[in-house]
Length: 260
Image 1 (cartoon, rainbow, N blue to C red):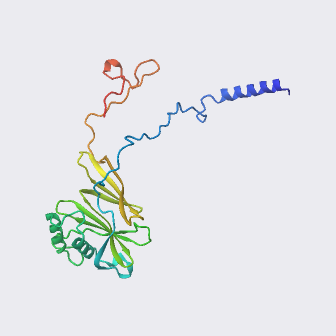
Image 2 (spheres, rainbow, N blue to C red):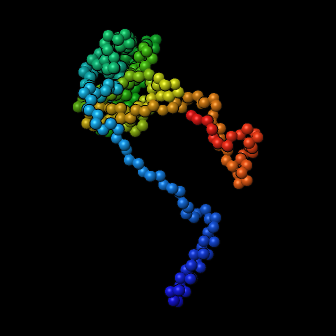
Image 3 (cartoon, one colour):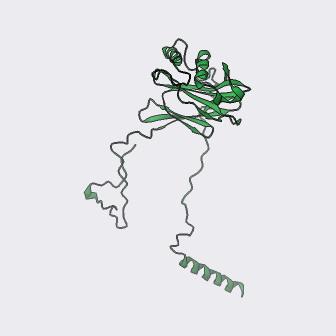
């Protein structure tokens, strides 16, 4: 077969494939125009370096807790109430010692029974949880302490060479706390109605402490929906009449309309 006849045969085969593949859902289709990639734009590149760091959110360094021994390095053998008592006595954390909330919390800690149940529910120490957050193969101690202003003080402790060490401390109007792998996720109240803060605390091997590695404000899952939702867009049919059974005389708009 010469080249001209070979070309004609190939063209005929392509035509058959094109006709036979018409309407085939498995065929390749164009995705349309690809948007042009845009790199980051640096604003105010000549800004001077700040002289004072921003206010820190919670503790960003480890703190030794004196007066509490960790038998065989096992934090499950330590009473969480004893840990909180010793820590609050030496480390007020986000409080000032002169704050009435701090003083009342310390007084309530004295009402905790040996089993941590307290008297008449005054003991502020919540149920303790254990999870390896530092990645050293040993469980760390996670403690929550309710405060008089209805906030929650959260502290995490690790054992390092038989020494009890606080590796995280924060206090906020907490809505919920979750453990995800080695991260501690805290949901807190936002001053913006219908929204809440989500802060992820993660172990930092350089700082030797838990740091707030991610902090965002998101729409609350239980936030009320808008009273007037956006109307569905009306798509014109092939005849030019809006689909969905609506016509201009029915009062339907030809566009989505509305806004956030």
